[in-house]
Image (cartoon, rainbow, N blue to C red; front, top):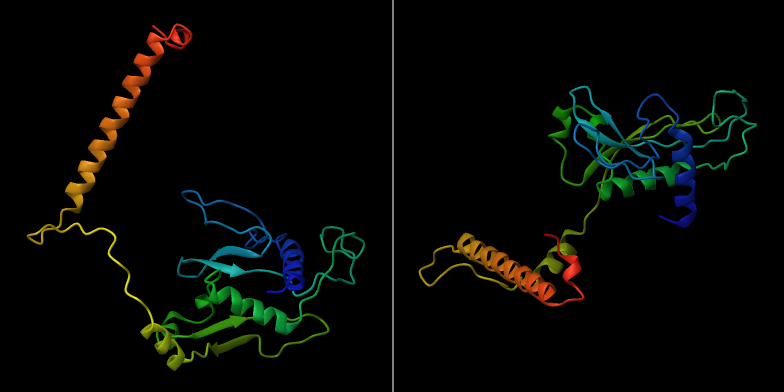
Length: 215
């Protein structure tokens, strides 16, 4: 993503968040119990629900916030002094694909679950909106990420095995991980208690520090 597209994205996400539906677009919110999840500020990722109750992440931005009208209630009205931007169709499609590849957004709600189950790995779908002077007849697209399987296989063959850092099996082949973790926990706890006791004794024996002790 270029700096120019990123700047457009921030502007158009800000312009799109003033809406009844999916109003988390362009806002920063940390996840909490019972809420919709995290939102990333300024990039237009918001959350909504599908008809079957699933929560999905969507890319909700405007294609442009230029407007010839001057509606008093609208943040994008002509007379409002705010940054303006317009994404080309290619920029929006590339942006959607890039976000999908990074797993920022999900697009499975665009087609029924029965069809999703028949998709081959690497296939994805998306939807775009048009504007007054740039009509898009085919708003939903279905594409495939082309993978060079030979190159990927060659790369995987060059992988080195991950070295064993710690083996929790004893000479008999029994898994001693829980026992080892418990022993480490008890040792650390005892060392902390010993450290606290030694510090308390040091403070009590130092006239300059005795005032730090209560009781």
